[in-house]
Image (cartoon, rainbow, N blue to C red; front, top):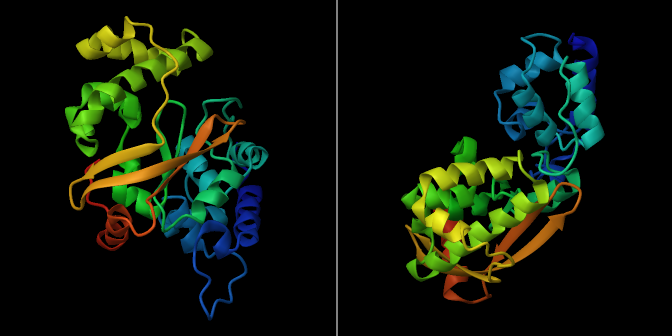
Length: 279
């Protein structure tokens, strides 16, 4: 059963413990609120202010597991705090381990400070969990994707439109890279894993994937320099730095352009025009 009073107290204390700068928000000159405002916590959790406020007022329906996961991420909860939140709301938290979608608070704090840089947190299956503002402008809003289509490697083989963001000369290598990477993950996670499920689905749907899978190619790694073909500003060359969280298998990818380069200027333009890449 949901413990509404304890849930409300827990949410309030965790919200008030966060400062705007902790989550990449401006503090403002006249700010008097202790910690985050309710509307800020709601926005970070991708829900309406009314819905979030009702939880802190011990009202409203029992939140779903999806809602709780979103709140846990928005409030930068640790794994233990996330599990506690689930218990208070009357749910059994998912088991810990690699491959989950809960981003560690430390990795989130780094991402929150990269608002003016394209960056994203991705799973080992290439599912984007969170993006910086400029990352969203460069690569499109990943939050709009559902199911297997959240994985870039999966989309690559079943949705031709997903390749439009990359130079045609790079397509052949990227196909090999995604097939090779998925084979390595299936090897680590084993049959019955989500990775194995994606591979089985792709074997049914994509002739190109079947041909590459039959090669048993492993060990390919992406180039440090990446080229995006953006529909608004054209080709952008960036250097990719990767920070890996070994506790979750998540990676923080940060894309930077050489100072003074044409690509750097195009990223500055994207910061102004905002997202124009379709999901």
